[in-house]
Length: 117
Image 1: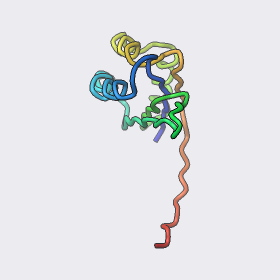
Image 2 (image 1 turned 135 degrees about the horizontal axis):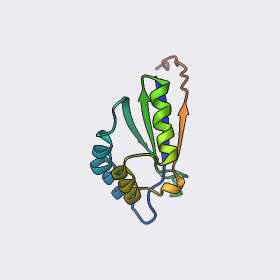
Image 3 (image 1 turned 180 degrees about the vertical axis):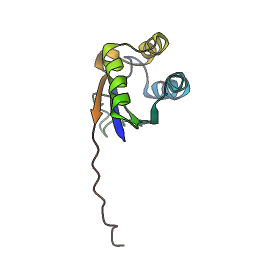
């Protein structure tokens, strides 16, 4: 599988709860109209540190594709703002787009031995 990771920060002034609800209830259904070629669409929400501090992003979106060519075309569209106008308009309601980053990634997994009980 060929993966794309997108690091996103919520719009200033938006609460975490509102951000997550809007993303799941509005942005995901909108994006699903354009997910031809994607095999998997997963969101990883970042929790604040115990002291309440936040990281540079609020969610890491992961997209999986069968081919590097499709992944690379999606990445090029993201980087050039060549996405559908309705997606961009919705992102402006949700994200601080100036802080968005997207990368093609390679995954390598180490299988761990089960812990002795």
